Length: 406
Image (cartoon, rainbow, N blue to C red; front, top):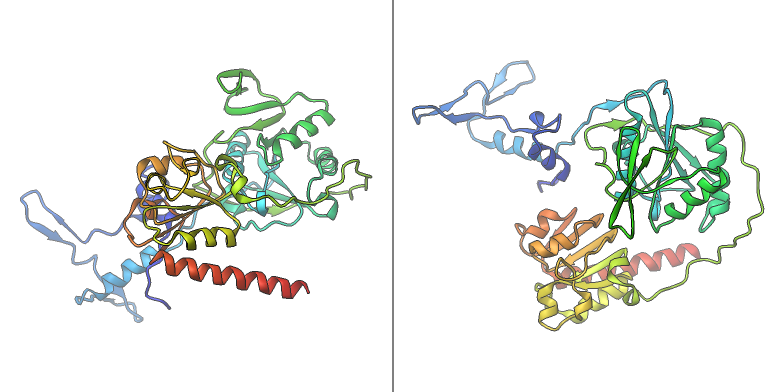
């Protein structure tokens, strides 16, 4: 096994959050402390380990403490299991699942569903087609219904509404929750509500008892109304689930879906130049900063990845990137699903601008910079060597995919 200490960002967050139920379990054992008279006190019974014969042994070399620290850093947090054996009612959620995975908007929606479900209800997630998500349990899903079939591939709102109506007839949920997003949830929710002849609450950002509050007036006003059955929620409508894990029991429709002739035909995706995508709408951003020394290699890597280019303020001020490519509070606030920061230390304005990004990857020489602390995945090393290796890996992957297709 490698001796490299692997970071667990979730364990570190729990150790900092005093209100989390697992906070106390994540605290290191205190073997020494300063007494009231300034004398260092030691707990001689706290240091040691149980041997194979059940006898406690003490390792005074210090190696044991170092090994324990490494094991603690890589420990997996085991959250308490939330079970609903016989749900009194269901709260149905239809996540966007962009790229086959839950987005931050989807997780906020599931957090809101758990609030509405309470202890007696169960959250039922309805997913169309194949997915790549393996973290439904920690996102708050009690039951999972996967509607398979080629008719749900691509842009297929009519077929999806038909499938949701079958789910509605079987489970009769107390509430339907869909993300009010541009990724499909907003349109699907409005179509589904029209087919049920119900008036949905849109752009909902808060629910209080039997009342919901949504944005109105171009986002400048709040509109309060009684809580309806159909809810289209905005991002950050609730805190995502973080202190429990759920069963994710699979369920199926009792009847097969009848085939319907669609009036809309999906002709496939249209290739778009990543450089022409506005920064605020880009889903994959490859951003460079002061640590980038070979900008030609940076542009080549962004083209190989098919990513939209971005930059820090320092790189823009130095003339390496255009002003409309600047990311941060003084530039453009971005909401990318993946944000790669190359040679960016992480000024507070830049971190504010990427606060809504789902996954952040940092490439930097300084392991203690703020961007490394913010990142979900960090690569420590010279950016030029890492970018060259990344280009080789991408080309090898694509060539292998072409051979498999042939």
